Length: 218
Image (cartoon, rainbow, N blue to C red; front, top):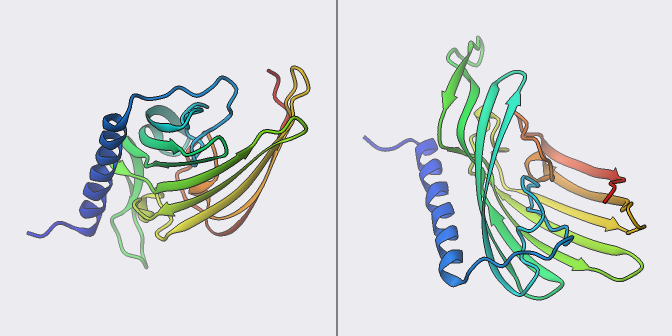
């Protein structure tokens, strides 16, 4: 019996994740980022420091647990690798793997859908590749991120957009003592690539405008 396309996507994403992590750890020991570097992954699932501050590779494994009012609890593992070529240029790759998640599955037809809750384990979301350009002058700090999403997540479960995506984002920030205001402006065609701390149980596809402003205290 031949494996289904979904099983092939899951197997390929797991092999990719293991290969990326193995390559990074074999190449060199992980290099911690400088305090206050502000670098994050393309999907925004983890803390600052995933991209190394010095030239060279780094690897990470983020674990996250969240609760959705519709689908309950879920557990997410996000392996990732990154490499810094220079103080201004770095690249990174990651893929979320849902160790435990409840999804709504249609056991009926398209004309007469019947949705039931199913618990799934080890299913991937969309993998992400990105390049980051950073400039840190005294007047204004700036970073530009260009990300590409690969359709490794299952669309029916709300874990993927079903097609390749892109995200171009501009981040500006300025330190004023304990206050560091920042603004982000960009464009994307998949919500999975927009930096966010909470995963949604659906994916928005199509041209999206990005605008966000924060006023954090340090």
